[in-house]
Amino acid sequence: MEAAPPNFHFHDLQPAPEDFHTDVIAGLSRQTKRLSPKFFYDELGSQLFDAITRLPEYYPTRTEIGLLHRYGEDMARMLGNDGLLFELGSGSGTKIRVLLEAIQPQTYAPIDISRETLSMSAGAIAQDHPKLEVHAICTDYSKPLELSGFFDVQQRAVFFPGSSIGNFDPTQARDLLQRIAKLLGPDGRLLIGVDLKKAPALLHAAYNDNQGVTAKFNQNLLTRINRELDADFDVAAFRHEAFYNEKLGRVEMHLFATAPQHVRIDGCCFEFQAGESIHTENSYKFSIEEFQTLAAQAGLASLRVWQDDDALFSVHCLRPI
Image 1 (cartoon, rainbow, N blue to C red):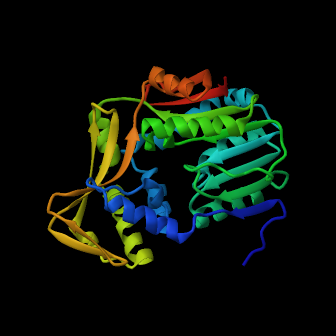
Image 2 (tube, helix red, strand yellow):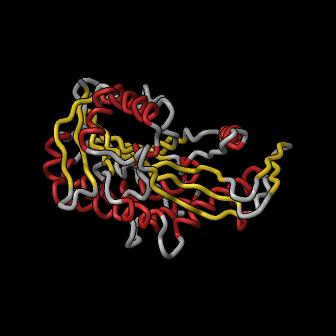
Image 3 (spheres, rainbow, N blue to C red):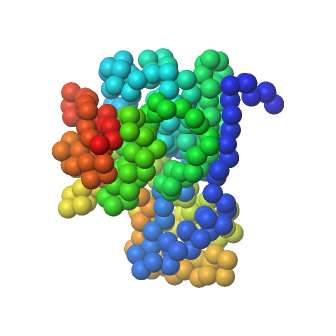
């Protein structure tokens, strides 16, 4: 195994397996069954999501990367350089590579829940940028971040791409943005990707691709539960479906049982009727004004907004109020 470069540091704060067990049991015990999308990202799930981002129907990733290429230097000036740059949900690290040369931080701290993907992508960035201190942090950023003592850098910025803020219900999104504002400190900056409201047909195509990759990604969550929690889901008896809920302004992703089924997990039995769903993800879409209002409720003021010519996607620079 190749030795890690000297500028690479890995901090494993990944939630314990019992957290996964507890959350799954609680989610399937609800009247409307739910599973958290943060559990999509085991090793195979991360690979499948990376494949989704390259699909022709899936506009968010390529549109956001286009904005980073087009306005990266402008964004870097807004963020400042030679400080500490966090990235929430860093994934494969594709987007941050567009910005790193322009921002040139002293320290880069990617945060992701997928240990294998984080180690590989952050290690590669450390290898390619030998003067950059890379501190990869494996943890669940949807919960309060305990990072005191990790860093003693006054100038801080956070990069939060992918419109992952849309995976949180409005109250949860506000609470997360409040925690980010606290992490930033009074002079910090947040650069965040936000998906915009658009024609339902475009949204439907993006989350129901013709190749079925999104369906495999969704179903892999049940495969992971079978493997890690010794469950007995008949994965083939659940079909993927995603649709735009216009009233709530969100794409909902579900797994629908195609036949009655009993599933056992650690002595608990869960009964599914044909047509019953497990709600696995929400992806809220915003207007520019709606997102700025949400940010203001969390104590963040808008400094700048960039969007593509077709108004599909936006990137916002925010500061604590």
